[in-house]
Image 1 (spheres, helix red, strand yellow):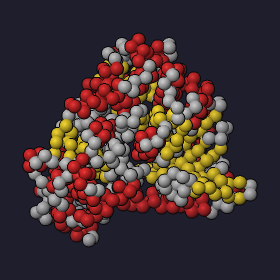
Image 2 (spheres, one colour):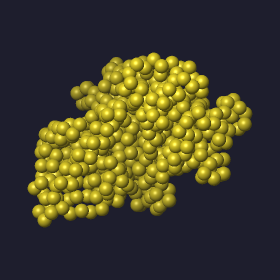
Image 3 (tube, helix red, strand yellow):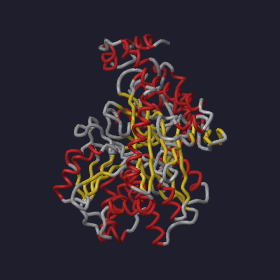
Image 4 (cartoon, one colour):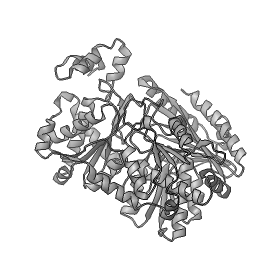
Length: 590
């Protein structure tokens, strides 16, 4: 069916609500109509994420119902026990999140699948935890994470509390495709579903259990007790982190926590920030302003679904500066491993996880403590998988996992990034540093002096719409074609227009190409296939790299860089140089 035919059905058929039809009939731009209907909103390993609005390529009650019908049929195919165990559903503060959560629950109910529906907004980590708490077969989190206000999403979790596997996502998508006409999706009245026992509301019992679980993960409680009155500023950025973050900080003993009042109340428009993303230092502006007034030592913020956390701290001269996600991850890794080693609680066969686009300095930190470091593809689902394989069903002990995009996890009862536990850990780490008469910047500098300086950055090219997606795909194809044309080390030396390329990892083909004087040496990569090109650039410590990959959740082509050197300024200078060269290399293909 053409996009025009779909548009006519959605804008005129009595099945669709009046608001949907009015929105569509008001569109005068044919390209806009095409973009809304030329395809279905893609369901990938992270579920759905898209712009709010009417159409098959938008987030709305009909696309949410379609995803839920696909999930319901997948669960039915998995057996009677899976149907009985049901699905946990939670949601954040975005526009239409409560409505989408309810549609998910009633659609599942229409197919006979039970659900546990959160009685108020709760964050990603609590959804993941609740799947395990209720022994559910799956979970749904309605969220678009840190995207701008015009977005929302539908994130699916497996029975382990981690994001669904590629195989499960494919099976759900296959079942969704059975409903090419959304008018064929079953529906059920919400009150009738509750009366039938197909929807159960949950609330405080999970809050209590989750907080108690996190309290068991506290590090160096003695330092916290001595620094319990340290002044802390927190902003939930109008999201779902407010209550759980405040609960855990109070539970472990922090008595002096200030909340940014203008950003405390949930609001899907996120009116006080350009974007509700703690990766953007500007998101902490109001927090820093409050910190100056109350003389706080630490400022931190969480994104709408509270799976990402960004921090700023007071320097020795009284100013406030932010940290990158890599810096926070590196410090937390060292904090956890060092504290456990000092206390004699660091387990045998301990391991930590990070991603291929995160700081390479964690290799040296893990080596210092005799801990295995595992690298995964970008996306916390892969870290969750490693916990399942090596801790839950293996003989190893997970310590900590993080990715450069401000996501962190400690413990094994949550299988996605968790800004609530990260808040507890960051505050505890700050307390330990202050207890030693140091700032967090002193702590980071000590790590750098021991392991070398490392600096990482990322640049994104945003290309929305059908044409933008095609440009991103074409750019990756062109880069691969240029890689395949390189047959010698001399040819590869100038592959990305500046820094010498020593090797390239093409994760779409699971091959690493090393360029030597004798030719190209190919070795197999063991990570899952993914549309990623990682360029190894050598450098002072042999660790420098650059990477290109399309975002899995946004219309972006992202490029990453990491440079490492014994001298701080040399590392920074090389970062600036490679960033300019690699950015120009990619930009030319768009």
